[in-house]
Length: 305
Ligand code: GLU
Image 1 (cartoon, helix red, strand yellow):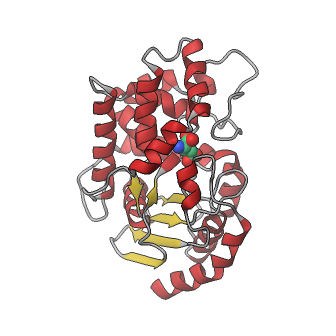
Image 2 (cartoon, protein in one colour):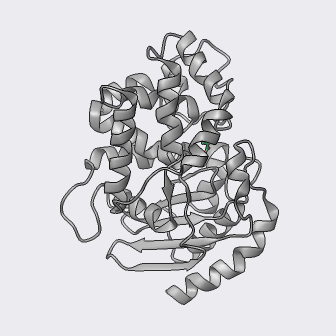
């Protein structure tokens, strides 16, 4: 299987030319647009990797899955569902106009910025620093990698150039949906987006979700089965921003992308896949990454549809 993955990766490298590295956060613009790497961890524990799989990058929006999981762990499904909806917004990740009506919780989705910022307020902790520490700890547990930490330069860049996210957070506040201090909440969100990972880390988190909360070969639930199912379902409709419909057609598995160039794909009961390729399409999804996932999905018949 490794040679097949190598071959597919080589076939897709040229697609990196069709995208651009994110530059709205200056630190992200320093990534090498020509990179493409993949890591697959199957349900039986076997691992396959190819290309630039060792390159670290920031998790960005993929952390929204972990923010949602932590919020579910701390509050349960009912309380979380009261704060955020589950319908696709069909809008870009940082959209202000998610609705033409008065904003209410049903218009928010935890995979889109406003909903994800709100998830930070649901995480248990006396301070936002403590809340972030718990998100980091959950990331380490899910990935099985205790050395994971934030990339400080990206975090500072996010914080400095985060006007749009500030606007979104103040909009939540103006609508009575966010009681805490905006800067403190955003600091937790910015740090979470700046967690540095590799394809292997994403594959490890993905395979736990693919196994509905368990590590391959293990009986112990790292996260409750119901919460893994909740996250996977949300990803199908909204994980790839406003490109989720097309992704469902082309690849057909729950997945979450981030503007750092990562994609975490979850093939239920089969495998977790981590992809890295920082050249993005206009929706913020990795161009070569989606291309490679499409080929992997066809080759290994992963689509759930
Ligand atoms: N830090 C990014 C932001 O909120 C995450 C965006 C993303 O990956 O979609 O601006």
